[in-house]
Length: 350
Image 1 (cartoon, rainbow, N blue to C red):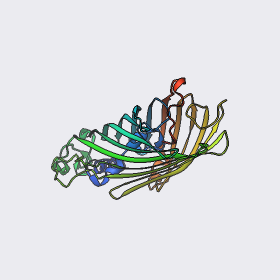
Image 2 (tube, rainbow, N blue to C red):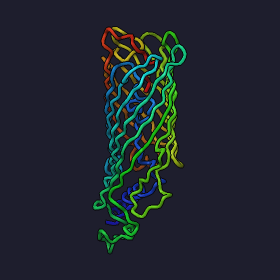
Image 3 (spheres, helix red, strand yellow):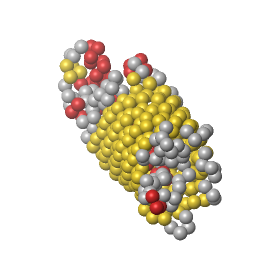
Image 4 (tube, helix red, strand yellow):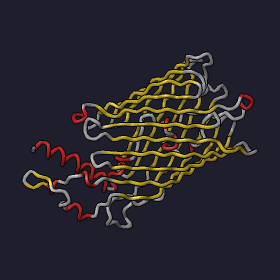
């Protein structure tokens, strides 16, 4: 009984701390191993940055199942170019929704975002994009499933007696979000080498996201800054290297993911496009947290990917190394044949 009680208190203390403390919010921000499969989460400027008429995708992630109730995140996105102007630029729009559920108290974060981006051709084979994103978020927790340490009386829990309730913990809070980003993509004339560089700022309006009813004007969601770098290098007609780096910083927390994806084209039309048949395998490292592996298949505009994290953080002993599992699917609709050469995006790494 003592061991079970200790485990319950420890697990629920962590859940409540992440729920009511703005300094720990970053721990609950969504992150994906296959971050290129959620481009509108990474940077609003990536809206419409692909070679085709429309892009749709979905992703599912589950983690920490060996430690507590699994943390589950799932999302979907869709975006497309709207129209091109005579100066060589085009406007694109998209939508991104995701939901995150964590821990024993079902700490939930539902977010819906709408994004727009303007892309402008610069130079011979480069494209500059500026994107904006806005939306609505709702965070909630089921207090009826939480127990607090000071509710234990002679080995029995009595819910509703904790002094924590004096803090005024609420079940739900809603707020609006504003994000922005820029990116630059380019390629050489032979398109055997291409790159994309991006930077973004999230939570620009710093909304109040605390579940505490007794809030002050000083309480707010910290801005999150991001940076991205992606390359696509065709070593020959069938083999490509696709290294990438993702940087995120919020308050005192920093996350860096780096690695490389190896892609081998196996179809009859190898080369740089979204519609050839290829297999891929990638290795990644998230600083101080996990070593990841990804793999999957691309064919006829579809990309199906799997990802797995091996935990190397301080939670390794509790998790037995078990981190997160992901599955993601994306589809890019091609141009009609007679318009196949209408617009070529320099790099579709994200």
